[in-house]
Image 1 (cartoon, chains in turn brown, red):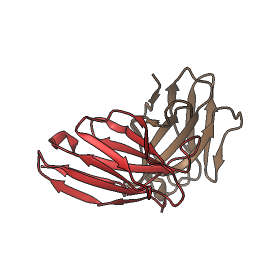
Image 2 (image 1 turned 135 degrees about the horizontal axis):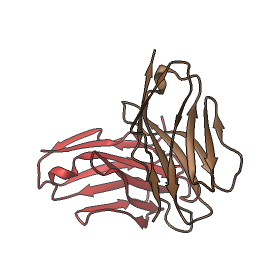
Image 3 (image 1 turned 90 degrees about the horizontal axis):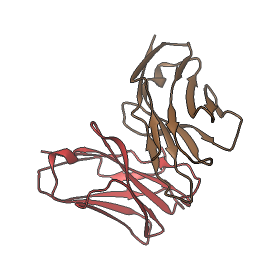
Image 4 (image 1 turned 60 degrees about the vertical axis):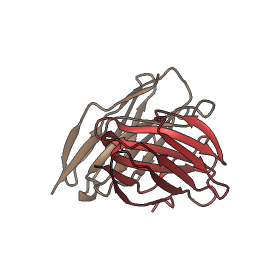
Length: 116
Length: 113
């Protein structure tokens, strides 16, 4: 069964600095999707970034980028120029292939604190 | 704003009761997913509907059921509620349920006393 592991329950960063959140996953599939979702205190789940496993190029969305290492089954999120509004829970998620079920499997989350 | 709406925002009820949570997907989205977020179980997939039909089931209890109506809104019914059912329930939607990104609603916080 597929699993997603986030080994850092909490992380902290100074405003304007860079922080990297770790995520590893386990799967026997070759085609899948990976996501990072942000959950601020409002509890809304907000998509941060998405990566297709067949793409070698790492996804980037403004200050957010990923380091996708398919062989190592690693999918880390880098936040550059951290802002106070980045403080939230961050969840890594794996999406099963379309020919199976479409559910998202989530990690346990990393709470990111941003200090001024 | 993801375009997915959920009502009510908060629900407080007693053990043994039954509640219905409602979700309206983004305009044009055919697929709806339900997730439960609790302190001890984290975020778990419950069930998926696609264009009115059940497509996938996760760790959904027999006391829970869902359906998707012709206008594509979905309802999650929770019955014989227990204290452990207290959680945040999310609905998400996608256009086709394939490789699309899931966009989440704001959630319904259920408290069972």
